[in-house]
Length: 498
Ligand code: HEM
Image (cartoon, rainbow, N blue to C red; front, side, top):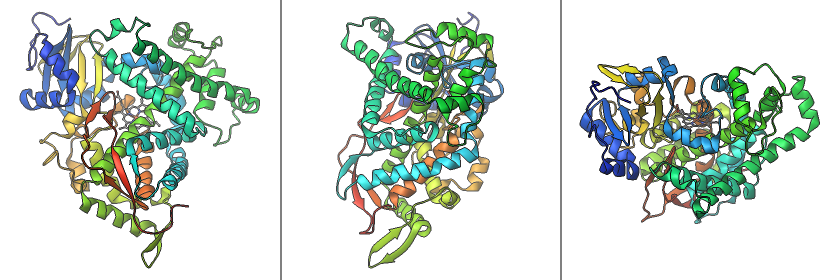
């Protein structure tokens, strides 16, 4: 609770206002952007009894995320997401988090990331082969599907088939919608009434996701030879994936801090197979589901919004095609173009696609805000922020701020010169967050975005179907509300991918 003599920073009202709650629920992005313009770098408001501070200064954000990160915990929305993600890498705290990050980190070292490049190109090619000239697709659905396949194969060596991917996606879609409802002031109360169809369906969705993940765990456990090698540390690079790393941690006792033991006590829920003194199956489940969701939803949103933007700017699209042709075109004969597939070695050459992708993540940051809970009283400027307050730092707000970007709403990949990047304060562009809780998959995401665009756009031009109501749907990630329909046009009468 705030002390009586605490001076609050400027803001809409230091008292709770139902109107404000309505604005924040219906259009949080617009509301927070207006606060930035109207009240400045530190904004205060109240929701219910909670004090909320919106921070719009890159140096303060840097201090919160990097230098003083120990002073904060993950924000309220992620606390709710624990219902789905459990205590995996995104939601856990303290030594539990650090320990899990240590186990998972080697999968994201540069050498490993490079080895995932071919998977991106293969999956993008298969998707692209399926497409037909003149057909209409929802590019968001296509991207959700292909990025799920990519993450499953890359970090779990698992080929998820289209049917299972569709089942996973629709269960995830429902869970996300439901978690949004839980943010509503009476959402938590309604959640106790399993008789309500939405509530029982949400339980059902989590069961579907769990059944896919637990099957994977038990299948891997059954393959005894892998387990033996896990235990004797004899894995080859290909077998050293997320599941084997987590199983290895399960079979070793050295990870058992007090937090681990506490976690194991708590996690004897929902069918977990607890092994004494080890990581539980529940904990393995939490990390797998976390990586699958964090590793595909964000990238699919990023690529979807990128295509949406490119489709509206023919000159930018043309420049992108020219770059692709320069790098990938093998031959051209009477309008028939033959391309080779891109490889990771081509990545440094796709300078323009990189700028497009960077600019698209500025305009539509796939994670549009980061929340934190203040664990110990914290001082910013002349303000004392009491323990228990919430902090919001919004990528969307900062990345549309005219102090850092000329014509901030304009899609202009060319703004990203080396000179511009050098002068930009670090936390005026932070789609991947930063510090100890920064995105573990950042390099993976850059590689995936660029290789996906290069592979798809060497053969297809994506035209926006007219008269659609394209709207942002800001949950934890920034989805397009009703998907985005695109008409597929083959770029030349050339051969398709091979
Ligand atoms: C364009 C794509 C992506 C964006 C914009 C993005 C963004 C972010 C952001 C902003 C955070 C920090 C959240 C916070 O501080 O509260 C984060 C964390 C995380 N991301 Fe990503 N991400 C992307 C792709 C990926 C991929 C491909 C993976 C996995 C393969 C991944 C896995 C994670 C994990 C596990 C965390 C939690 C890290 C920790 O707390 O230690 N992300 N991401």
